[in-house]
Image 1: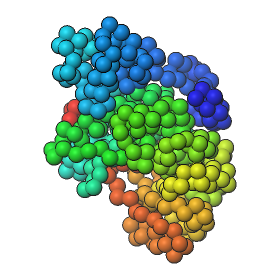
Image 2 (image 1 turned 90 degrees about the vertical axis):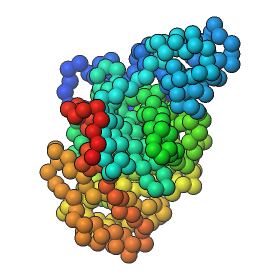
Image 3 (image 1 turned 120 degrees about the vertical axis):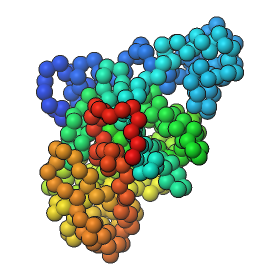
Image 4 (image 1 turned 180 degrees about the vertical axis):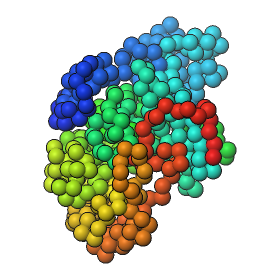
Length: 391
């Protein structure tokens, strides 16, 4: 896994983060010193611990206590104090064990869409903030998780990209977001089951590949989520896509494309200068052949920027050979980006143009725009509202 990390991160763009003071070089990206990953000895490592470490934590207990604790954390989604199958004295000890403290501190929880969209703002060790969004639909519940505090990819129309990069999230910090969402579903009225996880929150998942893949394995093996209900998004980290193609779990892949020619994509998605469209599409072909899964292209429609008939034709030329599905997303407003979303008539015309070119497209309904929880809006601004805000 270390070699895999080096292969991916060493090719990411240097200088994607502005400034030079107090930074260290980390696999080709500049990060604030000491924040490349969560410290191994930091408190709040509950979901970073593996079974060996849990066994060591319970070295004075019968072996079956390890399975009880593991089952309680992952199957029951319980706090240590809630594990009534454990002796009271052991529960009390585990409840104050620093290694079992949660790694996410709740800063705010915001409800909208009549309770169908829930956004959490979490504080991490070191002071970084990340956001998680849970969305309920009639047939499913999907959580959108963050994989980095900030993002180094520099896409100007994305609020996270405008904020810059702070650090990677650990495997446990990613898993804990999913546990929080699954627990919310289970204790909701009516109770629901968390069905889908999309790695589309703050950060570029494939720039944090080892920890993201560690989270995927944990979600699949211990939380019981099907690999086909897990989707990783990327702006085009080609080595990461190729690594996904070699993995045993066939998770979904969504490529945030937004432009179908290199001149425009160089402007919208700066990483395209490192891996142009031809290289990206070659990696997508490799992934599709290896997994047999349908590929998705994400396309944020920006008025008079990427919404013309020629844009649709160019997009179709890339999508058809890959049998890719296109998700059309009206651009969500962010303070640092001057352009606006394509009007509804233009969105419909773009979707019709794709259909005429033989490409399936869906116009994604925006969820959570009023609480900055929609695609491209996650920025983890410090909340000034009460801990719970409802529409």
